[in-house]
Length: 570
Ligand code: ADP
Image (cartoon, protein in one colour):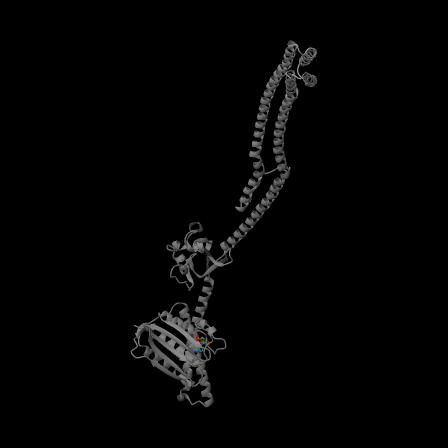
């Protein structure tokens, strides 16, 4: 049944009850009215006629009196309603006829009057009886109407109490269902099986919930599948992977990370990483930059695992994700420890190889140099100009070879961490003097003027003289190499903020800004630059920093370059 029909039936039911009450009420009122009318018509008229007859008897005008009496008597004869009234009326007529024949007879008049009074009496008794009957009927009608009213009231009350529930019940059920869906409880169903619109709506709702449930399960299954796939990938990686949330709580660690940290995932998952780092050295190194004032570790980490030394390069990735309002927000960190042991071993093999070759080359080069010296000696025979030139060339190339092998050997020292330092207090001017002497010939070849400006009263520095001279020579050689002929180079040594700073300033070709960040990298050469190994500056950096000093550069392309290094003054 449709809701419209249900409401219509409900209203019809109420209307029917009202009609029933109204009909029964009007029925009883009508019945009582009819009864009263009968009294009026039957008995009251008789009383009226007999009263007129008695008045006629008292009228001295006999003719008019007889006439009035006759008229009322005829009306009475036509208004016989009570049992015995017909006989009494007939008796009254004969008494009237007798009175009419002898109107002076007082007894006749008295007899007629008594007959009239009898009829009056009869009707008054009838009125009392009828009144009693009506009173009884009125009481019964009242009782019936009371019973009917009570029944109607009970029915209406039950209806009024239940009808809204009947209509609103399904709506409440729908509200429950919709709330369930809102709370993502897709197993919510609506239990209405009626044939009305609510039943249809419930069917549609349940179908929707079924589809949502299926969709969620398929989505969840998909997400779980993707999650387990990613977990499998991460767990099978040869690199150690650690995931943290944005508040530095550990989300996951893979088996490699477990073995390196000597911690199982179940032990530390969900824990605050800095708390674990307080008792785990490796984790502390890994999350150094996340700790207050911590700096990221730049060198490869040497970790002893699987019975040997392994090298790992650490990468810390900031993971960003989109928030609900579209902002890109930090949602966590991933720490990856890349196993670079293999490369490290290859690198060591390469370094050893270079060291061996450089070392082995030194002896033949020294022999060549010795031979050149002998060739240049006039005592073993004079050479012509062409031969002299050839010997010069051989010497020049042999020196270059010596420089290169020297640099390569130094490099291998740096790479293997075998820099032997011989730190002593030394005067900055001493270092400058040794270096300028070493490059004077080179400078002279290009007629380059080297100006030295050393501040007065400079304190000594703690440094390895040979290594520092080597660096200054390297910087001066580069300055000469990349400066034009007949130009000038300055060496300035100053005291700045408790440091002694050496500067080598040239006015040569300069270096483009984009290459400056890479200038101290191993084997880096500015594209198109002259011959060289690209090692000098990186060795210089290692030499200076291993002594606790600092090194840097400022350069303007095609205007000149300034290299500087500084040591703490004593
Ligand atoms: P190399 O031995 O090849 O000169 P370096 O490490 O000493 O290697 O220098 C690296 C690169 O830096 C060089 O190839 C050169 O291009 C550039 N460079 C170094 N010093 C200067 C300078 N004073 N002026 C211009 N370029 C320079």
